[in-house]
Image 1: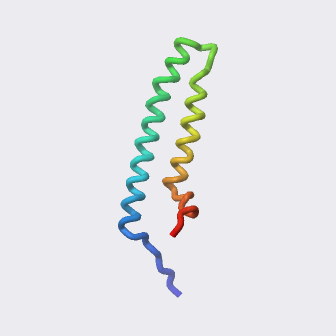
Image 2 (image 1 turned 135 degrees about the vertical axis):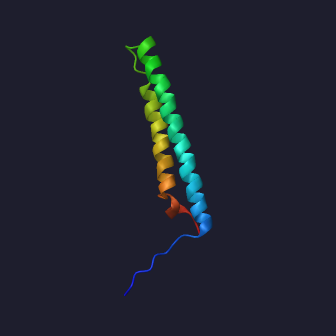
Image 3 (image 1 turned 45 degrees about the vertical axis):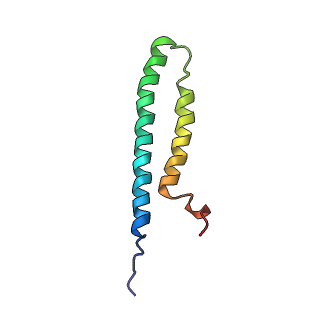
Length: 79
């Protein structure tokens, strides 16, 4: 028997593109901020690596955003 693919409706594909684009902007902002923060930390306070806090804090939020974009939270959605 032949397998048939189930394509999501166009509206859902548009939402997926918007989510992916928003994630891309989030990722660019994350790396841009760290490109600024790490050299600032190393040049002004080399003995205190405080840049690790935004790296881990923002990175964990970014990981949740990535999970959302991949649709891992869709199982919790009703309907």
